Image (tube, rainbow, N blue to C red):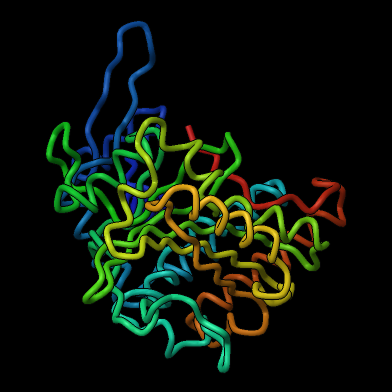
Length: 330
């Protein structure tokens, strides 16, 4: 429905919904307003803040994280690759369940008996910075990645140029290659730690694809999105850490420690050359731990998404199983 789309765009992306027609009932109900642009047809914009909050609360009674609502909209996607990017919408509420107010070493993010070099960081309680109940996400069209990180690390989750509130999650531009989702954790007794997420909706992955996936959440790829600001300035603890997380479903990822020796070695060399270089803690979520970490409702959404995507691929709409690209919107 229009109301569902209204809520999802606001909650997940901080976006208004623009209907390219005059919808008088929505305007009369104070949900939307009429927007007239010279030389263009009249449109109805759904962006009224009080109506938004009321709609969010209404849906949240029976569908707290909007997973059922998202799942009901999957059938509207005509391409399998678009369904892959739809996962990027649905995953944000689950990231709250995984990371917010958690000691990560006590979850299945960190395997039992794993050799750790995090100086106790993952044993400190983490909170997601800037988390608000009524709005989760924003994207590169509204601010740059450096502005997003600056707001959460340096300016109390407010955009410096206009002091507006900045949501907790950020979707970078599709190019250059980099993370799909960014947010910031604050660890007790440590400080701020950026988190970079890459998503893969695949039945299987080759070794080179896994290496490429982890490369998108490492410093070199992230720095391409930051411009003149250096990643290390947003890692406030000592030593300087950031998290690089690959989430893959329904496939399995091999152990990070065994697969990325060359990447880790290059980071150690760079760290020796530059004392303040941030170091990456690589984490993974795959079929072996995703059911422990994600809510049951989200797993139902993923299974629904996986099934619809497979059907579309078999029907020839999308010949290849593409990686999760940035969510295409206008």
